[in-house]
Length: 174
Image (cartoon, rainbow, N blue to C red; front, top):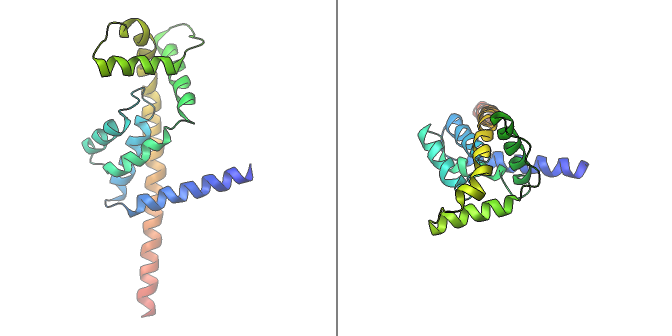
């Protein structure tokens, strides 16, 4: 467990260092990152980078940091995200519990429909799963945006304060 904490701490520091190197205000970097995190909770696999960039651009966030934010959605987190989003969507829509959903099959069929522009089976096979996921992602989208924005903005502000303090100390030594 201790090794996992060290790894996560190292990973978080690397992300903060990368974010700090980006051009932009703490707001734009944090808002862009939050857009990427929030988009990761949507069922639009394959479009996360594009949607995060559009969302970040729309609110004047940093587009590169939005791409970094989408890393929250990855092969280790997606199964948990999908289950949570689908369950929440079914709850909000008043649907019964849908056990044994094969997400790989659903995303394969939806990707196939988009690539071939053949939506014949989309309504029958994919829509009953994607629609509740679209509804269920809304609360996660909102909460994850605000939480990640607040965390990154706070960290960016602290890094900026440290930098200014170091500059002040260097200025006093000369």
